Amino acid sequence: MKILEIMSKEVEIVAPEATLIDVVSKMQKRDCGCVIVAKDDRLVGMVTDRDIALRCVAKSHDSKETTAEQVMSSQVLYCTDTDDADDVPQYGRKQSAPPTRHKCR
Image (tube, rainbow, N blue to C red):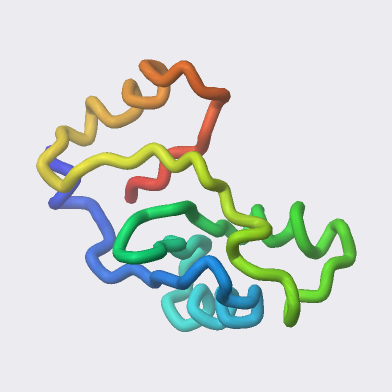
């Protein structure tokens, strides 16, 4: 099965300077747990609801002033829509980086 067959086609994108209020609003709008962070049409990171909980709420930061860039995961492993879904979990094992959550659906 190809990623194209199982992926979400409509995603939310925010700028690095977007406040977490804006980020959470987009998550709520799509009923999703993550948004892509992009700058100049390039992927620079991803913010998950877990990132917000651990890097903002748990540290008592103000979500009106905290930005996506401050809490995002900047090392995002990704795949293309033509990749085989069975191959994607292996991508993370091939990286020399610390374990990172996969963001394919």
